[in-house]
Image 1 (spheres, chains in turn green, cyan):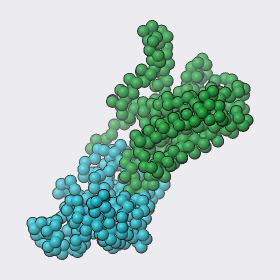
Image 2: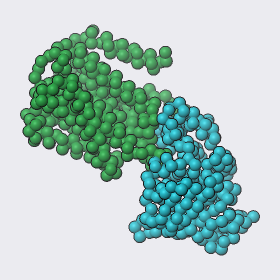
Image 3: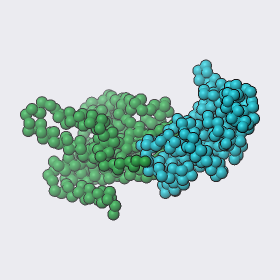
Image 4: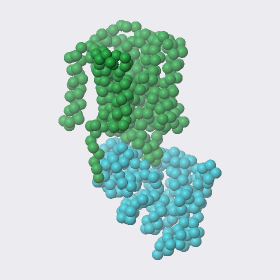
Length: 320
Length: 242
C-alpha cells in the first residue's frame, strides 16, 4: 500500500472510531468539520480547480435548503425524496448563473461580484415572497426518526456528514485524474491557451458550476435537516459563502484535501478561541474571537502560503 | 489545404488586416513575414478563430471555418501557438502537454503516452516534471509547440517560435520543425529570424500594413524591391540571395 493511501485509510479509521469515544458535543464538532469540508469542496471544485472564484456560493446552499424544506413543509414530501430534487435545483441555479455570467464574458473579480449579487438577490427574495414564509423562516416539524432524515443519536448525522465529505473528496480526486479536471485546470491557468488547444471554455465552465451548485445544494438540505430551521439569513447569508471560500483557501485551493484541512483548522480555532474567551477575562469582550484569528490566519496564508496549508506538504518542484 | 481569401480585420479606425489572401498546400512549410505591426499575428488570430474577421473567408480542407470559435477550429485539425508564450504555469510540462493530448482521447493513460512521445519529438523529455512557470524562454517555446502538436493537428500555425532564442537554440528548433513536417503536419509560420525562414519555408508571404505585398520563394522575395523597401532592408536581402 502506498503511503498516501495508508494515511487515508488511517484517517478514515480514526474518523469512524472517533464519535464512539467522545461526548456528544465533540461528535457535533466533528460533524461540522466534515460538513464544512463538504460545502468547502463544492466551492473548491469551481473556485480552486477551475479558478472561477465565487463570493456567493451560498446561493446554492440556500437553494438546496429552501427547496427541500418547502417540499417537505408545504407539500408534505419525505425529506429523503426532496434531497435529490434540492440537489438538482442547485445544479439548475448553477447552470443558470454560469450561462448568464459566462455568456456575458465575466471573468475573475467580475464573476466573483456577480455571484455575490445573485446570493443577495436570492436572500432578499426569500425575505419577501410568501412561499418561503419571508423573514419568519421555516420550521421543520421535529420527528426524530431516520425515515424523516432526523436522528436522535448525533452519531448518525456525524456519519452522514463523513459520507458526504468522502464523496466530495472522491469527486475532487477524480478531477485530478480525468480529462474534465485537466481542462478545468487549463482554464484556470490560461483561458486563451485552453481555447487554442480545443477546449470549449464556456461549456466546461458551465459544467463545473452546475456540478458545484448541485453539491452545495445537497449541503443545504443536510443543514436544514440538522437544525430543522432556516431563514433567509441562515440560508443565503454572506458569512457561509466566506466560510466555504475560507476553508478552501486556508487548506489549499485546487487541492483534494484543502477544504478538509482548512475546515479542520478553522473549526479547531473556533473551539479553542471559544474556550479561551470563557476562561481569559481579557478576551471576554472580543466576540467572536475566532473571527479575529481567522483574519490573522488569512493574512498569513495569503502572504506566506499561497497554496494554503497543503502547500506545506507539497513535494518541492524539481529544479532543472 | 488552407485558403484565406480577402480577409479583413479592423480595430476602431485601424485596418490591421486588409484583404489579405494566402494559400497553404498539404505538406508545405509556408512563412509569413513582415515588419512589426504589419498585422501578422492579427491575421493568425483571425484565421484561428480568436478574432472574428470583418470580411473575407477562411476555408480549411474544403470546409468554411470563417468566424468559428477556436475549439471548433482545433477540432477541425488546425491549431495555433502564441508569440507570447502562454504556459499553464502551476502544472508540470507533462500535464501541460496532456491538456493538448486530451483533445484526441479521454483516456488518461493514452493522453500521458501521447504527451511523452510528443515531448520526445520536441526534445523536452528531461523537463517533463518541471513546472510550466520554471521553464526558460526556449523551454516555453518548445512547450507551446508540444501542446499544439499533442492535439493532433494537420495544420500548425506557429507564431514566432524562435523569437528570443539564441543561435544554438534556433538551430535545434529548426530541426524540430523539420521533424514535425516529416511526420505529416503542414506548417504556416510567422517568423522574424530570416535564416530560419529561408532554411525552412518553401514559400513566403510578405505582409505590410495589413496587406499582402509579395509571395514567392525566399530567394524571389529577396529580389522584390517592394519587400526590400518595406521590410528586409538591403543588407538582409543580400543575405537571402546568397
